[in-house]
Length: 226
Image (cartoon, rainbow, N blue to C red; front, side, top):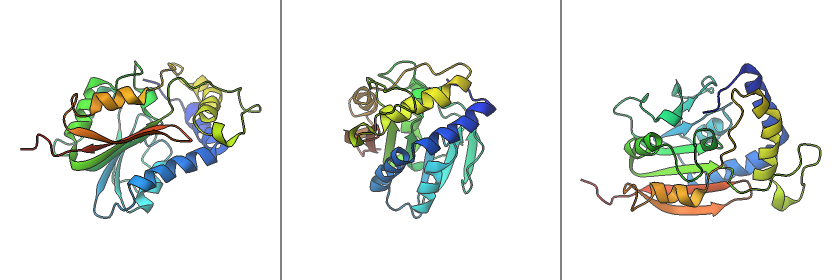
C-alpha cells in the first residue's frame, strides 16, 4: 500500500489541478449511474481531497468515506482512516450500503493486476445491499504513458488516463513512501473476480473503456438470496 506524506497530499491536489478535464469526465460517468441518491447511503473507498465526495453529495447521497491519510471531506457522514488493502473490517458490523464507489484508488492496494485483495473483495460483497451498485474506476493496465508534463499528448483521444497517470507519476509518487508499485488493474479480470461464478453476489452490468480510464459497474443480484 502506498503511504502518504504531507508533501504527497499537497502534490496530489496540485496534480488534480493540472488535469481538471479528465477529472470532470470521470465525475460525469459516476453521475450517469448514480443520478439520485436521495435516502440512500454510499461508501467511497479512498476519498482523497473530496472531489468525488462533493459530487455524490450534490446528487443527494449520504456519503461514508475512507482514506489512508486524508481527513474527512466536508459533509461526509462518517470518515474512517484505514488501509482498505486489509479489507473493510473497520466498518460497523451492521453496515449496509446502497452503493460502493472508488475513483483512481485501487491501483494503490493491489499487488497483482488481475485481483483485488481477497479481504477487500469479500467485504465489498458483505457490506452491500441487494440491488446495490459497485463502481470501480481506475487507470488501466497496459497504457503507454506519454512524456512528463510539458510534453503531454493533447489529442482528445489521449486525454485522461495516460496523461493523468504521467502527471501523478511526476508530482505525487516521488513523495510516496514507498513510491508507487506501478500495478494497474486489468478490469476484465477484476470483473471476473467479483461477478457471478466467482463471487455469486454480483453481476456485471457494464464494463467499458472511458476516455479517462477503465470502469466496471457491478450490481448485487438477487441470485442466492435467502
